[in-house]
Length: 522
Image 1: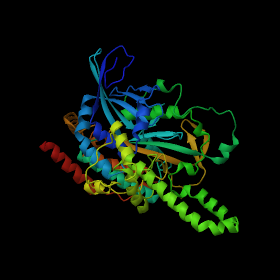
Image 2: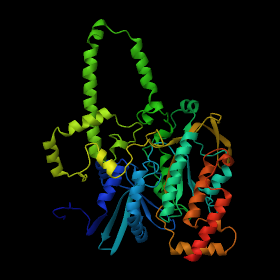
Image 3: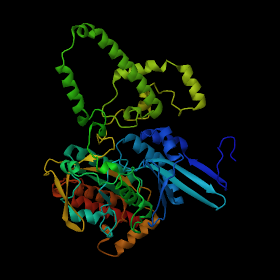
Image 4: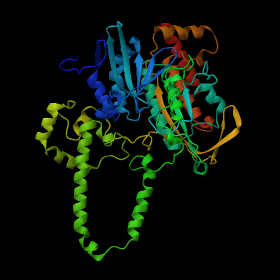
């Protein structure tokens, strides 16, 4: 029947809904460029969720939002308590590192079911694969080798599968991009090390860019489907060795086989962020066409006045747009555009000064709107565009994103690669496919496993077993982070031996001795 503050529902049983840390997660959604109204429409809309149940060790349930942007995962009590405990540290790390690869949490909730006498906790996070591209390969890598082989038929490959295919199938990136990406991975692993977190992994999705001649030659016997949907997706089960978010990757891979984008997959200027080099080709061409045309004398005479008025109107429209962006994403509005995509260039100072003037316009209308939908609180020191808040809370004013693509994918470095690339299917070496490159999607997942007492005993038990304990997943967070970085150096370029690692063998052995001595003291 509902109450004065809750709407009625058609369920036959009564339930109670709880929102954990609503203000903190509201700011996290702004931090990750998530529009509040689109988030509510996607997660709380009338469309049915895509349900997927995994037979993984945790036995948790997974749901996709109808548009595939967000993932809902049930949580254990231990995971819920741990996330709440590290939430301030997680917030600060993500605020200081806008390019973080760590899983982006958008909310944590609890539903109390009275008729079942059970509490269900779940969280909402952004999908690592928020793209329309078809994912041809999926990998889940940790750096360990014990038990890290994918079983026949598994969609998600693991560490040893990557090692066997190196260096031909390395995730090769441009040197500058790889350097920036590695620096961010190091910062993320340092934070995970400080939080005593282990057993996390790098989730990698690979999209093979179809060869143009092949894509244009074949015709109309191709299936057409909607994004992220497939009839047999909910029937796919993973092996018990797969982790929680890895089951999601298998589910997403099976759904993406039905997409139309697999066949109509030409990248254009619309695939890149505004200001990217790929987005400048059409503008240059338009500029050349405009210069080739001969204008009339009347247009030349009236051009100075028109240019001044046009420039003034553009500045005014830009200031209004920046004010709208500030209202949606403050104090992180300097990082995003109105659509929640990262900016490649900082905001112009002229737009900032004009947006301050726009604040004085329509204050009565804003006050009336705030009474209906009050905004998130701003500190008294915050200026119109958040300059005071940025200085007060030591937030980065601007940081260039790692990727210039709208879907945050990383383009493959084709400098030393023969194009088109010849690919063979597993189990069918006689079938060769051609591609013009690859796009990689990366994210660090499973960050809620703390190195607790149970994990300490497991690691110590493996040490007592003799050799091979360092190859297992359950090791001290310091050793885990070092191994995670070393394996990243291996699978991100053709010649892993040429990479200068930050931890030589002598330092690695000394760190292992320090960890062992620390464990004995504890």
